[in-house]
Image (tube, rainbow, N blue to C red; front, side, top):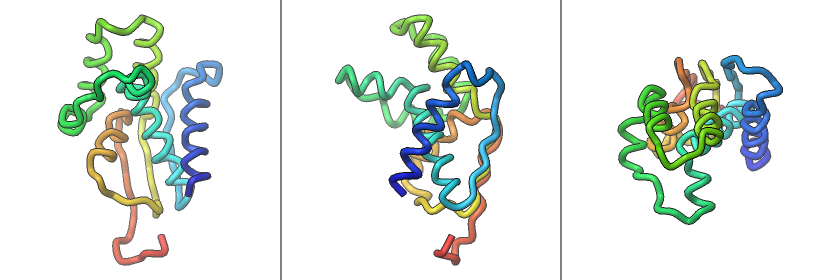
Length: 141
């Protein structure tokens, strides 16, 4: 699944490239493709919340409880727009990551549904619905 995770990071980078358009997208993934989508959402969340910047600069980590309890797009966009410590270019980049995905549909994804905080972060960059279709007793999915 490392290859799927790497593909998800590449997908996030491709979606962030404005030369590919400026419309919201719907991400749909089945099985390992769903793992690619979850990895993409995780990468977009890191960009939107500024977590990769904080890590690179070795600043204090973002407050995990804030991210866990306020993980909706409205809170995130307000958070970005009111952050006076970032440049306009970085603000635009982070807002794009926060509002790029309209819906995400995951079918039989081979990934854990815990910890919940990771899923809340992924959910924070989806403007519409996140649908996780799985069969709890079927470990083959």
